Length: 160
Ligand code: ZN
Image (cartoon, rainbow, N blue to C red; front, side, top):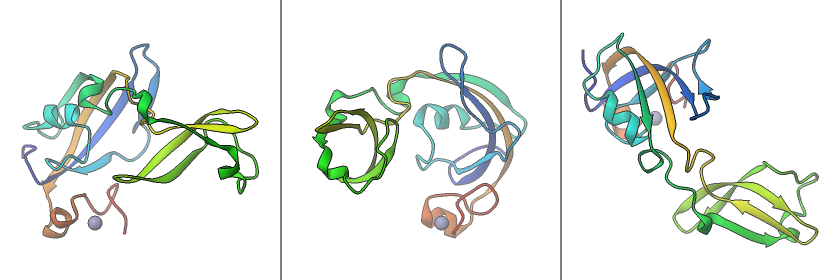
């Protein structure tokens, strides 16, 4: 079976940056299960997976425009520290979900002063070329329910 639209695909992957540092890996754990062809994974990786079969191995370098986009200064926001007074210990790197114009967005605290807090709405992997080492695992047809939901269910998929 080949990977085409609406297959549920399991992949084992190791993701490294250009210095060879491992950013993320499924090694030693469960593979990632995703629904192919609906934009559930980054475009640069989904494109390469199209047509692959179980057992195929490949490496691909994905540029930011085909991954999480460039790092945008416009997504840096300085807000008054009083907005965070409910947080006991505000620290750099803390993440919060906030309501943005086009829905919920994760932001990361990148600077704290006495009066202000700067949060960054960029994805933590924005602006970074991503190097994937991928092994394709099981491939199966998606159920109608999975297609309706737009994601894979069950083992290593969406639990709900
Ligand atoms: Zn679902």
